[in-house]
Length: 348
Ligand code: SAM
Ligand code: DTB
Ligand code: SF4
Image (tube, rainbow, N blue to C red; front, side, top):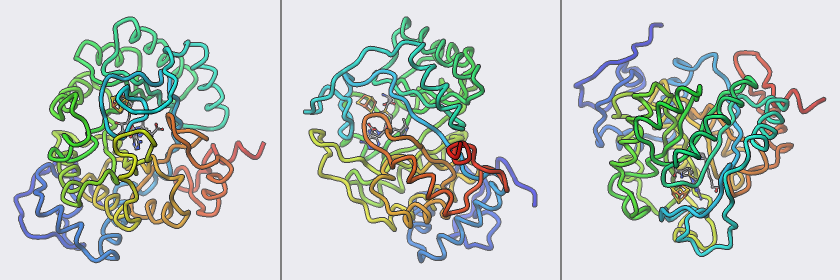
């Protein structure tokens, strides 16, 4: 079956599973159409999402990434969910940027463990030139180990994005977090447009975009619709779309907000899968609080990537042994019938 890569559609009817346009790559989604998807009976939505997954990602399997916080805390932004903001009332020790050697030691271990992508996060509003030089060296080192490299460093201009591209960076993570309407309840120290401007710089530099958001911050379904519409109507869909379930952190403004209904979380993954058919949807933060069954359903609904390791950036993640066991129980593979190295290597 041929896959159309770019196509605009003017149809305004609500798509059905047999409708070719329903799973084509489009950039003109209306809120009404996305709301209609959210409102489908759960089984119909999952059927549609899983069909899209099979059609566009038949051989891809589960992608395994690992995070490292290379510069923790002390961030001047006021993102209401984040432990690393100086505005959070939290006893988190701010650290300096890690040394290149220490980062490459962690990456070497990740490579030996069979991880595919190594993602480095820094709590900056935007990187300073001197720091960027150091991060570029980290990226070069990570790439030399045979890993894919991803960084998330805050806002970038074109020059900074180009420097990262020249170092060989594969992905830049920069989330829009929520709908344009709810965004201002989450962060006030920068605008959503500034986030979009950075994404444009990343694209201009030829780096793959990793961009998604968070659910469970007290937003409404209409906000989840608005967030997915914003992502799906970007000129190009992000290659990776992380869907984070809020990790509620004591001392942050949103500490009491979390606890999204599990089936609503799966619906969000499924709709993301349908409206951005070629993107890899990442089942990101919050797995620690999810049952194995909820994670399995999220993967069935179209998620194709997870972060492994004891820690995300500052919060905890399921224990690696538990994840390995879950992956084995699910019979998940890396590509069709290809073992997931991260699981295989643990047997040594
Ligand atoms: N400072 C950079 C930035 O904001 O892009 C990079 C680091 S930031 C921690 C990366 C992303 O992690 C955020 O955009 C947000 O979507 C996600 N995140 C941070 N804290 C979270 C939390 N408590 N729960 C869920 N996701 C979170
Ligand atoms: C993303 O969307 N989720 C990851 C990664 N990109 C950088 C980060 C999740 C962070 C969860 C909260 C913490 O550990 O501090
Ligand atoms: Fe800073 Fe990023 Fe945390 Fe916002 S999410 S406070 S920008 S580290």
